[in-house]
Amino acid sequence: VGIGTTGPATALHVQANAVSGAVTIQNANASGWASFDLRNPAGTQVGGFGYGNTSASSFADKIYLYSNSKDIQFSTDNGATAHMVIKSGNVGIGTTAPGAKLDVMNATWNVWSARFAESQGKSGVVLGNMAGAPDYGGTIYLMNDLGATMGATRLRASYSGVGTVGNPNFAIDRSTNGGAFGTDPSLLTYTNSLTINGNSGNVGIGTTSPTNILSLGNA
Image (cartoon, rainbow, N blue to C red; front, side, top):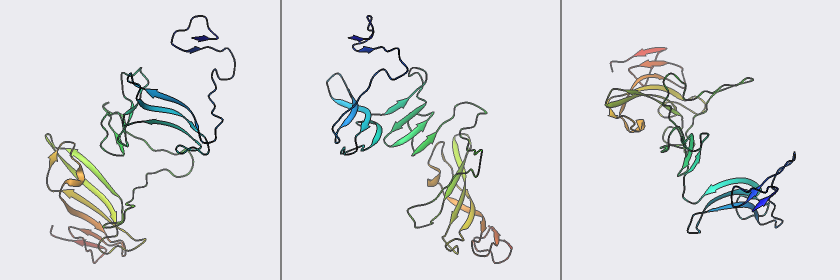
């Protein structure tokens, strides 16, 4: 069917020559959706996108894209490359199998995997443990490739030990064992290399309980 064209290229082809949109989708029922439903050859709904009206039972007053247990893939080269994938609640950039809420994989040498900048005001990344115990803090793992195995350095701010509210300890820990490359670094075993006491500001190297401005242990 061609609307505005005598040579339809698909089952429904709408062509316009105007500054406004070519097609308008509207649902006048306040509990309904102005939507497109996507179905497989068997007629089973696999996803959709649209707008939920203000009293809709889901997606109320939201523009949405959803799937029924299917991956959602974004691509700019006709599907040849999965530039971004949403899979099981995880978002992958450069990977089709994200293993974390945000998983960024860069296969290009000498190109940054991520950059955070601000033209005005402050810029940065906030890490925290919203669940609370045991450490009440944020952690960064810096992984390194040891060939067939992987080690890591762990940076963390926590209230465990002598840190108190508003004055967390800061620690640098090193892994003492290796895992297969790509292993979850939180599963490795760590020993402390440096600690800054959150209450006093004392620095400990080889000790987690510095009693002086600089305390050296024998670890």
